[in-house]
Amino acid sequence: MLWVKALHIIFITSWFAGLFYLPRLFVNHAMSTDHETIARLKLMEHKLIRFMTPLGILALIFGIWLWSYFDFYMGPGWRWMHVKLTLVAVLIAYHGWCWKICKDFAANRNARSHRWFRFFNEIPVLVLAACVILVVVKPF
Image 1 (cartoon, rainbow, N blue to C red):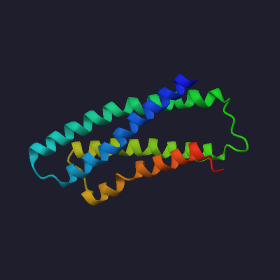
Image 2: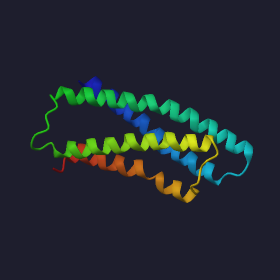
Image 3: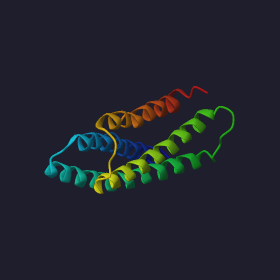
């Protein structure tokens, strides 16, 4: 099980690297006016979302594998896991939203400012902090 846990952590870390960087590309894209820069950012966004999606899927697969090791036990003392799984669902939705934003940028349909993307960029940071606290501290 330690190998499964290690792989889960590796894929989570890799997925989060993409979740941190992609919205930063959106900030730069929303600020850009140069056609050459915009074309480069579109390519980078496309390649990154396609690279990080399998990483997220593998993180989920290894997470489910770990969870199944504990027979999906969700009784008293595991309320922290309910909250963590809710946050995982938020991350999956966030990842899907990033796909939509990539498609909007690719079709020149972005209507949001770079300031909006700066706030959008903070969502995975907050979710990561909450998940780490939940897993390590298990506050409830």
